Image 1 (spheres, rainbow, N blue to C red):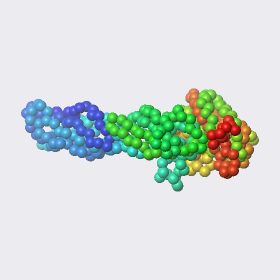
Image 2 (cartoon, one colour):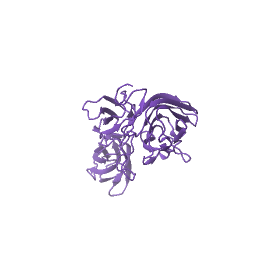
Image 3 (tube, helix red, strand yellow):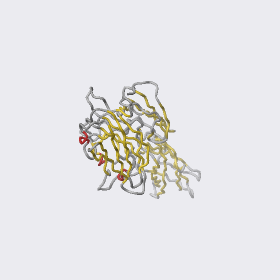
Image 4 (cartoon, rainbow, N blue to C red):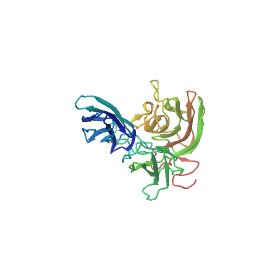
Length: 368
């Protein structure tokens, strides 16, 4: 007898039962029954059986059995399953392969990245803080829930989005420049030919004073960004960084004000294996649960979330806020270039203090 798995490759969706045909044809008057077998399960799939099984071919025209496989919600890519046809009388055996190209069906899930730590219930002693002190043009990113995405940005609890964008990437920057110290929400719908699903909504609170730099970091060199702000004194300082670079282990970032200085990021992942991934979207604060130096996320920006800086920001505690603040970004390894997109300062001033502001624009919207 001959055996053929037909068609060669079947397109299926995850979280569904996929099927293909196994064709058995008799040769030289063969009339024995054939028993079909396959592994019970594998990564991302489980056998649902052959119908009928066993089967008996009586001519050169194929007799068919329907092979059914259930694919788990997380199944994706090419899955190959070995199939065996065994003569129940002689144990003579034929071999074949069932091939399924699996597309993941979008399933509801929380956003896994929006300049925030991992979702609640991660490996920290306590749930992470909400995403605060986000930049005015932040890179927003999310987990893989489809092939295309529609992201909507809303201000507060507004029903109508400020902006909606569709992308095939898992991250984007909206064109809207956000207001300082205000609350926004982001939701994303992922969709492909297998279906669609919406994520949960993540709220973010923007930083006080942000500087939209958008300048290249010299390869193997240094970029200095100096900006003047107004405010009383620095208390509980937080620094937001948005840097694009294909290898974050090349970077050192420092903050300076008067005679004070602190190294915020110092080649994450070194001196061990380093981090050969790109993107730095982080809010640096002394109270954060994770150290920036040990981060190398497998999705989204490599260094992201609420992180503890390399050197404490308490170095700036009580320093006069009004005046020039300087951020220094160093690319310490040649060969790959990056870009400083934006950086921000926030301070936990008491209610009677004048909060940080940029270029004379007060946080209440009036100009001074």
